[in-house]
Length: 318
Image (tube, rainbow, N blue to C red):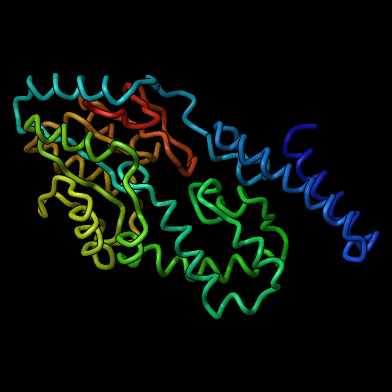
């Protein structure tokens, strides 16, 4: 029996005990069942923090990664030195390209903030109070790549019709607010030490570009405000967003990398999504291509013979 089977067996048995014994009329038994369930959820939450997947079947993609890549585990100080060395030898204008969401900014706070807004809205009044109470306990520790991952990490089974009904209501609000350009300013925070890293790159006369899958029409103003709010090095002409929200990120970003490479030498290229970086790296084979190992979708990736560096975080720069 693997962790997935164990988790679902225990959850099922707890629900069966409650149902068959009418636990509502046996407070001691009900508390015991709830205590067991909380302990199980806490255990798996701790496992997720350590990098293991949540045992929900749909969550197995969380930590998936390319098996055929030449991934070189590194740290941001080593990466910084590699970029600076490359910039000194550059024959064209040296630049460094950064993704935003999941690379420089932690968007988990945005999702948590939007859920809290939903909980405080009239929409939440249409659902069972006990379920709403459980949803109110969702916190940052449960954050995954998407809203569905967040719910699964929190112990909710989206195959349950009642839970899926609540999830759909929250998702409608989330889709509207997550991409509205306002919530990102209000809720997002920087990934620790990312700001100092970017500033250090710029101080060494390497031009900074931000290449993001955010939408130009709805998120441009908010993105500019966000970059200025945290005092990131910023030139409006160096902010590249998607004009067409339906365009695949990997195709959009690879085209932009190709365009940037015509008049510049791309010394560093940072991204948290493996698929995006695969397409981008093919257009910037000589760059230091770096995966920032936060959340990613786990989408299938092509084979790569180009070395890819990976960092788990940005180190503090003295």
